[in-house]
Length: 297
Length: 297
Image (cartoon, rainbow over all chains, first blue to last red; front, side, top):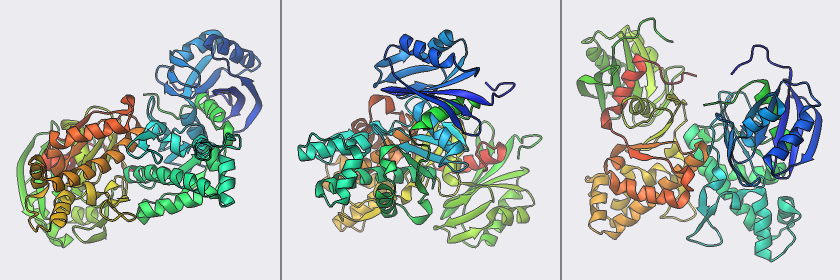
């Protein structure tokens, strides 16, 4: 699927649960002409909204990324809970409406590609894991983003429920940024979850024991997964994104300490925060359109 | 490193802690002229022993595999606890003595290659994990065995010690075949560990509650790792080898049940026992020499 002449810029479109991020992505990672529009749930209305944005640009190839279960080979959104889509041939719908080539990707795998090219990723291998509303991961091996479909759905792995021994809950209900806020609200009977993970981390800094316990559980659960990752792949650099990673050392330092408990020195990988922030997916969408560095198996 | 003409057969040499397995490996996976000789610890004596075997054969390329931490790029054994070797340039030592090209590999990664080509592996992706004296794993992606060095050293990941809450032990001290025997002996004060994992599984079948608890802990610990693997990679087929997998459904069935508790249906991968047995490493050594299907990064 390589092109005779690679375009110098491509349009990146990151479809989120509430907003669509659009921007022009250049091959040096610069992002210009950014726009944010509300996400319509009807895919044909969505195509109209994207067409309005696309009509303003000369780029011949559009990269579009989406959360959920994506089959990059066929351009189909297998399942997207946030958007209520199932087996939606989004690439074909958009290509028909836009009259341009569309490359469909997964938001987290595209974000990993962007971090690998222009962000926190070293050359070579990387595990990228945004800890946001949910949790998914993407593996970059030899500079190529691997996997499709259910690959990286670590957030759906069922782990021991700390509140109900003997039962299990999805990993992302313990270790995501949303989970911190939700679990704090549940534990304290507070309805104020508006402060989010940041609020819980602030309360932790103020010595709140409930916040401390919730953050400790999240970090231990995350460390269990990352230790297994290191065992399987060796000491591959880990790049954490999303709301929890934005807290920086307040999360990264205890997480490093938890990994020291779980790994011999030779298996301990560099652990750092993502640098591209909430536009990583849009940048990655542009990267997909500019140059295919993700597998299409 | 491809050759102008691939040889139809190659010599495979699998250096174990106590014996060396030697055999002629054909590109269809047939294994002939097999021999087993004791392993000398001195690498130069080892080279002499291997030379005696090699002198009997016409093969121009010899595949040699070793346990421990292997750097396939440089042909160096970084560390092999069983053999007492550290930073040993084994490939160069053997090439000098044998006067033929030697391809050095890791025993488990080579075993994965053999299972992938001629055994339990499906085309495409596979996680191979022998549960023997220790535990290491190898990842086959798109038919290529990935990784080098510390990749696959899952046995060294430190997990919760069921006997001493608050402390951790290497994963392989809970979930390997040797661990079952050793933990049963420790729990019962019995010095009879000669029956090995098989003996513990027989006692489990006879209703022995100590054996049941030890096997249950091993399976739970193993399932935690395999669930994380599925989250990271998607539902990649899992092939278990070594003494524990030879027990077949006595281990595989409860392991499958433990994975059902930990994974949504879409992340559950086929789980099966290896089929090549203890000669997988020798076969894989031959496969490395015949055709490079393992990365040399």
